[in-house]
Image 1 (tube, rainbow, N blue to C red):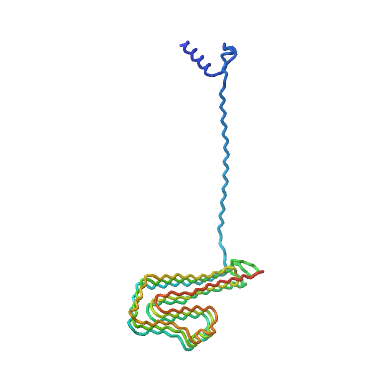
Image 2 (cartoon, rainbow, N blue to C red):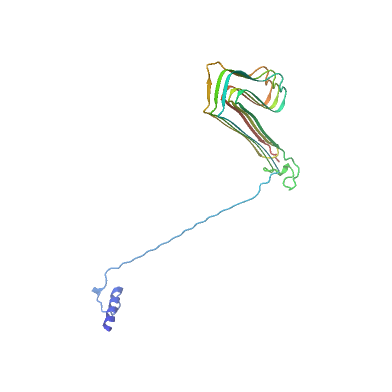
Length: 279
């Protein structure tokens, strides 16, 4: 057992690679090389994140909004006209000198869809005080004091309609002094025949006490898969504006005039004005 311990001590001394004085090793027995291992690892990771959230209420001293939504769909209809007359007429002094928002639809035939849409909004916040004390006079110069919006949406679809016409007469007319000297927003639709779609849309927004005003007029029209047969005849489809009709009329005037089958027509207008008082 003692001899074994001495051998283990000698083995440990040799494996250490260190020479001590007086160990009995000569100069020729010293190691002549060295292995040096140096490993350095530096790491620097910096991450900065920020997030801000602000919630609050925007106060309006006054708000005004108007919206019109109109949908017209003409589909899977069948028109068979074998002779006969369909007449629609607006004449004489009808609506002569009228003022304001005027909508006129004149149609002769079958399956015609017509519309006159108007959305008007006006707001005047004035200089009066509100109960919450938010706005006292124009000098506050508050851009969000009042808000006005007017919107008109219209969708028209005509599809898969069948029209068979033989020796038919369809007449739609606007004549005489009708609407002469009329003023304002005037929408007129005149259609003769079958499956005609017409629309007049107007959106008007005015804001005299703030800077926010919005007016939108949108119209979508689609016509497909329609079939018209004229059975060896000379059909008459006429739409007429004549005489002094609309003479001297002023304002926004939308006129749709169509004769035949499957016609789509639209007049759209959007007006927005905001005049905030300035200091």
